[in-house]
Length: 242
Ligand SMILES: [Zn+2]
Image 1 (cartoon, protein in one colour):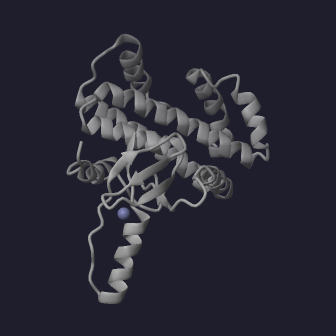
Image 2 (tube, protein in one colour; image 1 turned 60 degrees about the horizontal axis):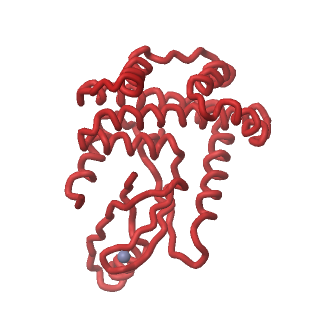
């Protein structure tokens, strides 16, 4: 997928110019391809190189990627990517829950190898552990597996409006999962995010300019709706070269 990222050098130059002359310089945030570590290696129009490390987890990257696919009207691709985002949100929940239960991450990795290729089994693990943290059961609306299975197993061509609804429901589910974690185990949630971010950052080659980029779609401090998030993304999406 591609993600919007800043050039560190251009940002610094613009900031220095503002400080010394009071003049503001618009800085373009181009789209560039993201790798599996969530890092965008970017060369800006002026030839500066930056590694932009997106401080988000897989469910966030994938959800955003699904939104871009949807905005481009690749509805079936969007369905499979939104489904992958939800599955990774289950995994994120399990990782944080293990920390809360004082179980080392290596124990989760040992168990995960039995289910890593089977999303239904991963959902099974999630659905049984969710009440241990949330104090209530987890309900998955039937519309989610129904559309996913129609698209993935039967080649159904999904309409834009039904995928938009599908994404909105998944957006709400992921935000709910994140709310449960931030309410019930904030320390463990941030430890999981920070440890993963450190692994990401260590993948940047030594000596290269780099910066953090924060994802906002599941920022629980902001009262965001799916509609307002999509409006923000649509603005970024338009005006970008193909
Ligand atoms: Zn630059």
